[in-house]
Image (cartoon, rainbow, N blue to C red; front, top):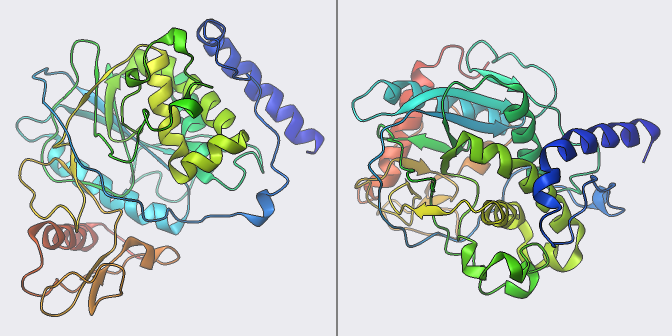
Length: 363
């Protein structure tokens, strides 16, 4: 690593250590405070877009609290992330003032380290990325570090935070689902703390309680108290980096490593989560909107012209965000053929409405 990167690493370490010292030293998990150096294999491993992952199942109950929360979305300055953020923010604005909404402010946390031309369109905080090579080809590691910077430096008026993602489309006014010091989160069936207990005990030692204290969640979507997140975020960053540096953990968790890191960090700080099954819907597997609040379009939607799903095979009709990783998604996408589920039809209609009404689309 060059001298410049070593100096930046020391600055990062110092700022994070000031926040996390009292928490980390109280845990016996073998976490280091410094950022690890770049992996020797990082140059041979690079991912520009997220892969398809399995579909989540089970969810739970809804609290009745009525408090404003701030929506925060982390993003790079890639074409791929940018068009998603613009669509996401369009629908945020549409539902913010509706009845039953407790949506407050909005911030795109841009971890490119520099402004882009959409600063006037989307409220944006500029975060610095990790030093070159430190993400070891796993670009999601920039997310917890970006949140640490935002929570340290921004003037956030609301007492709660919704951590969302660029590929979320809000379909209903979102109430504050958290209560009684608990966060509210979507449960992912592939986050299985019990299955990976031997690995997770490196970061969540037995004296911190049963492994079931780790909820089956990622960091998004999650609504959590701002003060709780200020404590969780530096630990989340450190745990993510430590997990990535450990070959056994990296192999076990792969692309969802940072999700496990958030779940562990929340548990380390004693912040449990209400598992809210109606937080979001994920086409094409979830077919009806029902009471869902968010459409998460992480999966490709492929159908033949009879309206039959051809998942795993490119359909005669398709919608897949990965088709637009290098170019802006066009206006006026063709609607699905008859017989395609409501969730997919609604998704395409909402994308089309947003792109038709956002000025200078495609520029």
